[in-house]
Image 1 (cartoon, helix red, strand yellow):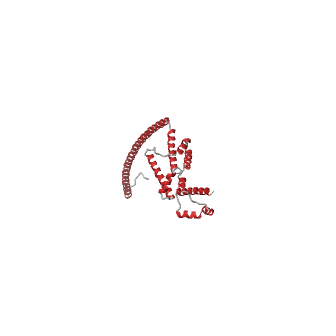
Image 2 (spheres, one colour):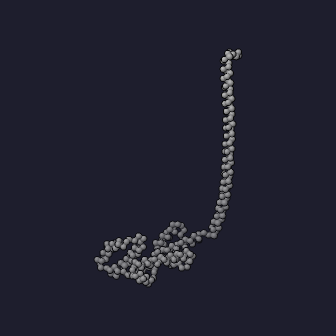
Image 3 (cartoon, one colour):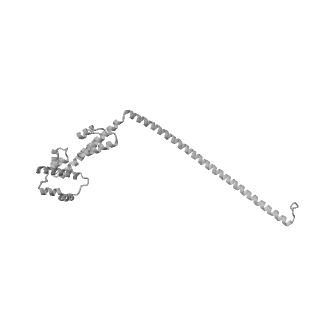
Length: 265
């Protein structure tokens, strides 16, 4: 019974270590120490006299279930028998290995890509999604089923490969030919529209220039007409002045002489 409780406690503690290391916002060490001292499970275990000692190699196997135990052991010993340093160092090693695989895949060398057989079989056995919601469900399902970061990246690569294949399979040669013909027609239509646009621009410029010339001509004609009318007005004013002067002189001369016109009664 004690051995079973110790094994369960070691597994729980191993998962707790993994959760702490995977936490993107880890708490400081003094907070963790305070939380450990105040934990009710730790107090109850001390009251029962149960040992909380665990095997570090077993913890590493719980965190990295797909890795070789001998490799984990040698890595633990190389890290100075410090569990935290071994976990962080091994994760860094896996991350470096994954980055190398991504670089090789981007350069076209996909022969050394490490893909989990389980992931490949799962993706090959399932039906290819036909719409966006099914693809979203598939992505969520695969990411939630990933065992670790490496497994998640492998699943993501497989999903991308499946999406590319499904996209290529959906387009038949007949559809490709139709799309090319439509593109040619659209290009011809675009060329015609551009040509019509150029013709309209040239016509607009010509009409605009003609309108400007007409406005200038009308302005000149108005100026000439105004000048002519002003001259005529001045001439009429001068004649009116002369007539008024003659009339005044004639009236004054008739009053002085006393001669009255016999025809006027």
